[in-house]
Figure 1: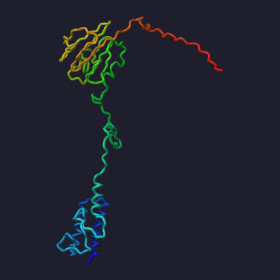
Figure 2: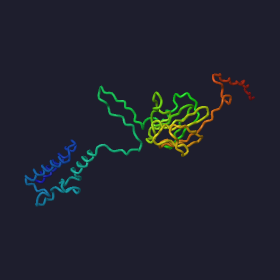
Figure 3: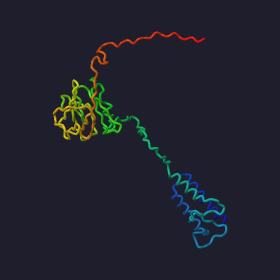
Figure 4: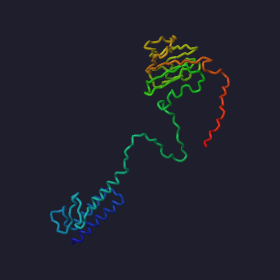
Length: 281
């Protein structure tokens, strides 16, 4: 077989490798195909460098500088086998990974099959609104004080204290005939009892009563006796479980001290006479 036939055989190998790369075939399959064709050339007793002891003539194939296993036609400027390998590696990488910006993204579920509807799930306790955002809604009693805590949120939480009974606890009130949630709830405080303490405000007097709790209630560092009323001074430091509070009284103005009688219509505002416009000549 002449040297021209060698060139044709090597060109055939390169063409087949390029076709396999365009079809997306795996590199291992193309490599096996190249080996089969090279073996077929060897069986025809064609001296190719690297497969036998016979040195190739000056017009025979040469080795690829990047991969000696690749035999190249002397007229080729680049190695088609290396190019095919690089294209296969690029395709195997897949999608490009984009660096995240650090912000949490809203993830929406995939498209549901026909006939199926999305399920509404109940939010976990940690995702529920803060008690401070719920407290006082629909309560028509007058606000006579407040308690403030910085235990669970660095910006602080403020809860109003109303005339009458104000329960502080982790869950529901069990001492009443109909159980209901505490007026001030701290569900994340595991050291606080479900119904921990009662703040009672009536006729300008402020009292605090521990509800037979496990960990007790401290007022200005003193432990309260269970079910016994104690005076609650202004700016008192209260500790219920793992939560620390500051209690602040609010002085309510008496009738006649800036408050209009109940049911009285608002006073009409005086309407000033319009001023004549100033004419400039």
